[in-house]
Length: 287
Image (spheres, rainbow, N blue to C red):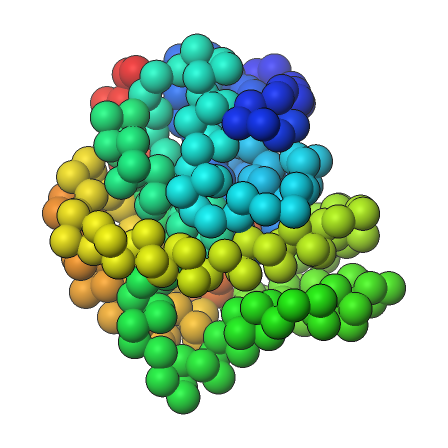
């Protein structure tokens, strides 16, 4: 049984919370929306048998600080760089899901010498989603557009965090009951915390900055080995985009794998399949 500990440090000017488990070559897991680092509960014990696993709460989420600004992905990638500096870690294998995949992609571009290999999970890169936006995509991404509206989401969600989250977890999963019980209750508590909904909305509201950053280096492909995973049955990603083609635009050394009978949350819906793919991809990473 590996030791799994929770820590808090000050890095890049904010208080960052992270899980630290296992020993060996470092593997960083970045969660997405509507989650926290609790999302990796099925991966941390498995990967921690072979690697040192670091799973932070992103800026604005979970137990990490929720400042008013700094949600563009370059700053959030800087949060990770500062956390790694504080921990004395130079190079990592990096795994990101959803919003965490956006941070991971920016980190891989801004700090290429610090990433040995990259996994992006159920994510269409910000630049490509914005470029290809049409009525069909806008309908699937209604929440993305809604979250951009200042103040209104926070007002409508306050006191209804349970109903708001239930919609996402039911609609986004292949099995609508995949995230229930203790797992769902854990997320509800997290998003009822002061500033939690605002922090998540601020992440989305950095979209214009994120697109500008992505356009500035659109011609630079990620050079490290990259694994793109996605749920084959999620209407806003695998069923809407040609994911191998999408990620071929982003990475020059790409493996692309759909996960069947799976929606937007592969690591929670199909953890055994995801863990097997991660272990295979990480094989040979020795720090």
